[in-house]
Amino acid sequence: MIAPLALALLVLFTIPSQAQSGRGKGKEAGRAAAGKANHARGSDVEIRIIREYYGAPSRKLKALPPGIAKNLARGKPIPPGIARTRAPDDLVVLLPVREGTRWWIAGDHVLLVDTNNILVDFFLAFR
Image 1 (tube, rainbow, N blue to C red):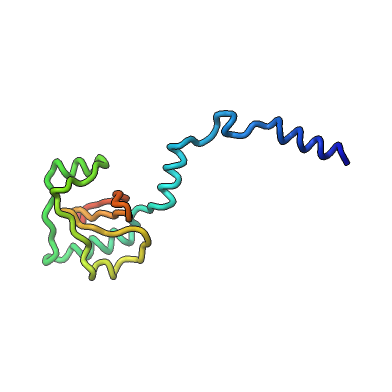
Image 2 (image 1 turned 180 degrees about the vertical axis):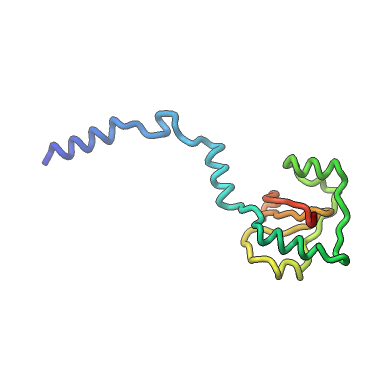
């Protein structure tokens, strides 16, 4: 009876944990995994619905200035001087319900922003 207990303790104390052996994920990988769990990109269905909505001639948007569009593509935040507006209610009603995010319009880009105002995804409203 003592032998199985001794063997279990021996195995428990001789096998190093991942953190001790330096094989842990680290802070960055943990943050990335947590971010992916909380922030899902815009789905193909949502993008299609939005592009169809803005495909109507009466709903054209003005393009962002080229430098701002480049910075947005690089992941930089939108400067405070660029007006962003909430997506129209008649468009939001068409989209699937999504917790913890909001749709915004900045120029001709559609932005998916979480509750902390962190950009999750963006794309052109029309092609």
